[in-house]
Image (tube, rainbow, N blue to C red; front, side, top):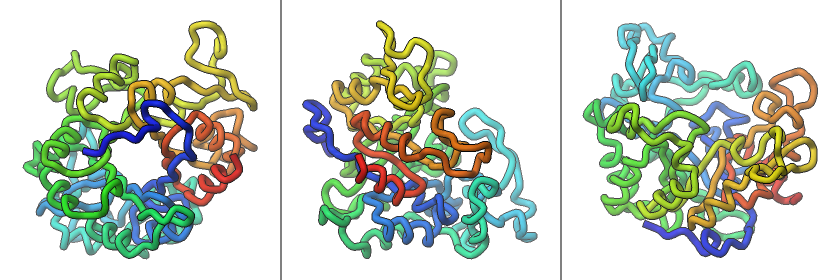
Length: 359
């Protein structure tokens, strides 16, 4: 396990790492070779894929294991009988699931834009690109030049999805991911993240050299803890208290990654008043103390996902009524970066790099 750098204890702010979220997913259908190659060309300093499993144990890059919204699977008559309903992390989901297919079968599908109403230009690339495995992306990163200005290799940030669910299907993601990544990359090049702490612990115990980052939602409870503890499971909010952050560090977690709205949002009532965790900023925004508290616990802090469209911006940064139009993304991106966050996930890595350069 890699230890958090000195910035996590006596923090000296550094420009945040820009992580291409599922590739340059604002421009091309996510998790495709085109999205990853474009992210590298635009200067992305790290690449983040989501990892799910096939029936035969291959690690495929998809946002979810239910793939009706991101592939053309519904158009394949030979797979019509695979449509089913499953319970994924406590929710009933109907569709087609990667764990009902072999890799040979999935390789016949083509990718589609996940947000076609918001990203119509990207949707023009529907059905042009095949699906990828984790090993395919590893080869792309191996062939990529060093990050401009640093000379360091592009980092790989692997998000392990639905580990408790897959374990119940006889597909232990800790074993599959560790076997795939154990001998890959140079020191400090690999980050592994998940919304489930259990799989992070299992991967660390398997000796996979990586920075381990715990993903935390704004609400709800982690699926692995719900499966184990039921209604008494700790919530994501419990993990974000000072005591919760200290517990994570003591358990070997190196960093946390949170929804950007937990760092900067439209200024809530009472911001700046005694007892408030929110400090007012310009333009009707406010920043929380979460990054500072994570650093005080010797944890690195990351955030997701910086997106320029009005739909994803807080109200003070929206311009006009169109949800798909770009708002004042520069103000929002820079406000998030000024919290001292160690890395930002962005669908448009070039815009994040532009915002960082102009700080």
